[in-house]
Structures are given as structure tokens and as C-alpha cells.
Image (cartoon, rainbow, N blue to C red):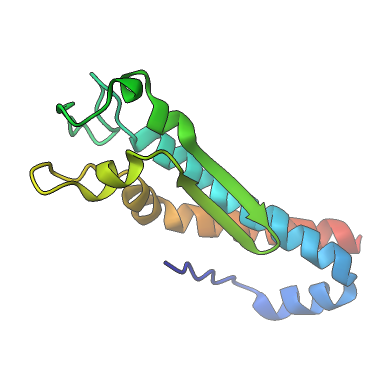
Length: 142
């Protein structure tokens, strides 16, 4: 899924970016993307249910027999990570149960946490990215 960021005052931003060296531009962009990724990571962590707890929307995710004992202590929740390289930020989980929770199984309803985190927080992530870019450019051109 691609997230598009629209920044008001883009012309001024481009002019400021052209005054900043390429190394600084890369750092500003990477820091901004990481800040946006943190918003999604935090939301996914909050939405990921563990035994006896539902997600923040109040929907209770019952623990079924396929839900392994290891996750009863929140292993999937703890496995959610964020990795930023350049202008790419990946937020996800490498836990074997995460896709089963996210997409469900033939006889088990999906319990999405990543998709919901993106859907509900992409506007906030975009806002944070835009603000971080503007702040970084202003700080670099002073």
C-alpha cells in the first residue's frame, strides 16, 4: 500500500530543499519518514489483541484454540517493529501468527491490526511527515 503525502507550500519547500545539500536532504527525508512510521507502529501495537484484551475500538478478540499459548503473553504485539532505510519505512511483524490474526483462517474471523492502524492513522502519519520535513528544512537553512 502506498501512502501519498501532500504538503501545503510545496513550492517554498522545494526552493528550500534545493539550498540544502543532498546528504542533509536524505537525512531530513529519512527522519520524517521514520516519524510517520512511528505513528503506524504505535497504532498497530495498540490494536493488536492479546488474551483477555481487545483492541482500542472496543471489539473483543476472543482467543481461540489456534491462538498459541506463546501469544497469550503478547508475543505478536511485542514482535511489531519499524525499520527505516532512506525514504522507505517498513512496519510489521515477523511472528508466525500475525498473518493469521490479520487475515483470519477458514473458521476464524480476521482480527486485523496492521490494516486498521494504517487506515485509521495515515492522515496523522502524513501530517507528522510533512511537519518533520518543514522543520528539518527550516533548521538546515538557518
